[in-house]
Length: 309
Image 1 (cartoon, rainbow, N blue to C red):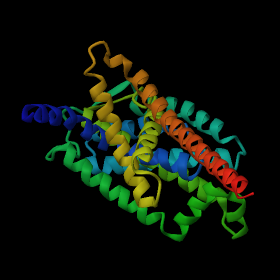
Image 2: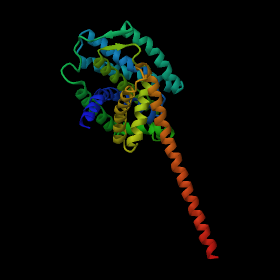
Image 3: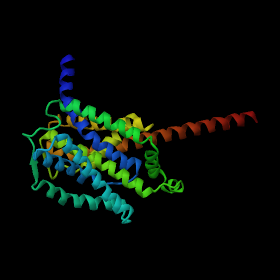
Image 4: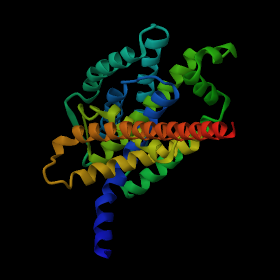
């Protein structure tokens, strides 16, 4: 039993680290899809942008923390562009994200100069500390800052924009501004995740962002299914936990002999399907149970009233 626990801990140690690396990306997806109710596909491009900016700057001798902040700024700029296309250009939200995702592919190639850039011999933010502990601190700080922001007047306006644009406009809030801000923060977090992943892996690749939106959604859905969606503090914690659990599930799936590394996208799709379908089935079963209970109560009531006569 003790040996089994040791083996299990060794199995999940790396997934926990990966879950924390991608937790920032999951938080970014949460902002657009849950708070703003905006289907933003810019994520697949801005993740690569973050990694590309960080890798190129670090390879040129820039301090890794400065390079990481540069990646954050680049991601925020990408989010602003998506927001402007949607709010000022009056382009459909989904189409705005697709346009930026396509545009960012060429931009990222320009930044990198080639399909991938190695930073294996350069100093990174993980140079002197274990990535697990560094990311634990970064994620906790980022989560708490996000929680604090959503309690401010501006943060509440941003949340209200996703709930009911017409209502919040009646209070004099410029919903175009809050939408652009939300997309900017979201893609900034996604790019930050791309930057730390590039530094942890030792390289940035032009295709690293492919499928990130699905992984982010999987993390959000899994976390919400486990912890629920009460307060903002609880929901952001659920998203972080969902990112970690997703990576643990993927790692355990790889233990199945007939699955290969190339099956990652398929595994992700299956996880998302299960996470979406299970709550629906549970809801349906609960409604049927309540309907049967109500029918039984009405039947008993009818028999009681009939007996009285």
